Image 1 (cartoon, rainbow, N blue to C red):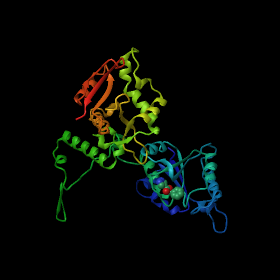
Image 2 (image 1 turned 30 degrees about the horizontal axis):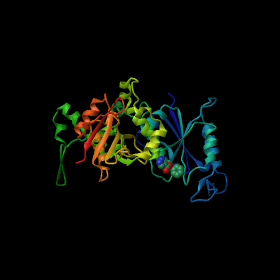
Image 3 (image 1 turned 30 degrees about the vertical axis):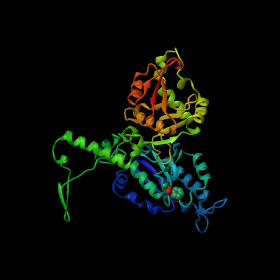
Image 4 (image 1 turned 90 degrees about the vertical axis):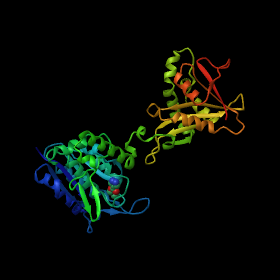
Length: 409
Ligand code: JF5
């Protein structure tokens, strides 16, 4: 098999020296990887071999000039297999790229030819990307949300992550299989001899379960360790259902107009069962409403939007809501409505807590609470009775609905 080809262009080719070592170095010697490192300055033709200049429009730092990069990338392309119309997939490390991941590594490991362009300073002149994209696939890739001085360290990481996926690079096939489980949890802790280690006076023991020979107990312990570690270090990897035990674990805010579309989707989803049961005999308002109605209601009620906590600034999923106001026809009553919880978070007491939250908003002069639910919604009716409400359906109750009330205590 022809080796997978990797070209790296950098102003510090020596930075890539580690690619001669260890498993990647062995893969090169074994003819699995063909790594070629190029000095960008070989393509800078002034007396000082200049590769950078100050930015148009001002600003801090320097920008890498386009001409050396264009020439260097053209030289890489031209060095490809003679006669074949093949080009490399160009990877440009940078903090503004798509996140590198095991999935991307696996995808890159399928390609016959990768080229890496190591930027320095404030980055490459934008036209380098245009020049490259006219000739080959280009992907800007980020190792994570932090800034390095240049792309070289990122290339070392990516070549290692990709290289070890190539057939014959990692000897132990099992070490690859294990990771391909990818159930999205962190790994469990591992131990080896001695079972009891005297660490200069502190005795450190291997957990007894691992010495027990009870394989079921070991698997159970390891799974629990993975869950605990993931919850502690990477809560973003866990489904909300694993972390949100209560309202206190969620982001509860008064809803704004920006929440309206998601609130509409939530109410439609949560009232579908009631709508199906109605079989056209009556209108179920949460299903009949449109975005305008939800926006108008945000002005007439205090509505809470409950979200999964934001991760890295990205707002979390809307998972619950409730709303409350003084009753328009009876100022002594506090009206609560649109209590909704997504299916995967039901049964955690969120509905009960949200109802209590909505009730707690009632001003001091309010003497009782009022709410309406579906006549066929037995579960909901039981829920409100447990929360202290009594059925008070009367002549003004709309068809398909039942009214509930509770005296304030
Ligand atoms: C680089 C100009 C590229 O800093 C990075 C990076 C951060 N996460 N992933 C990559 O790339 C190096 C520095 C300056 C261009």
